[in-house]
Length: 93
Image 1 (cartoon, rainbow, N blue to C red):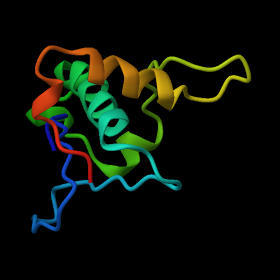
Image 2: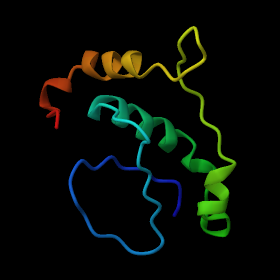
Image 3: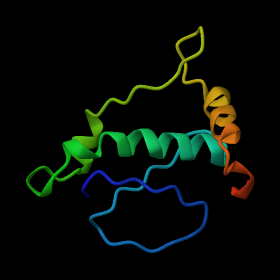
Image 4: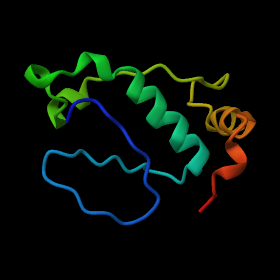
């Protein structure tokens, strides 16, 4: 609603103001945490008068590391998160 993104790897309940993003293909928990962090970096753009809605999200672009083919580099994202000092506390699904 206000540009705050959280990664959840378990079932949860939410109200109708929450957008749920599901990847089209399997992405590791580590890469998903990277993605949620990048989305949160853009959170300042959403205030009460500019709530993040489905129509807003369709035009939203985030910058991600890419492979030589121009595809998102999920392996790099995973390696980055795993390299963080607290990554030993993250459980993989």
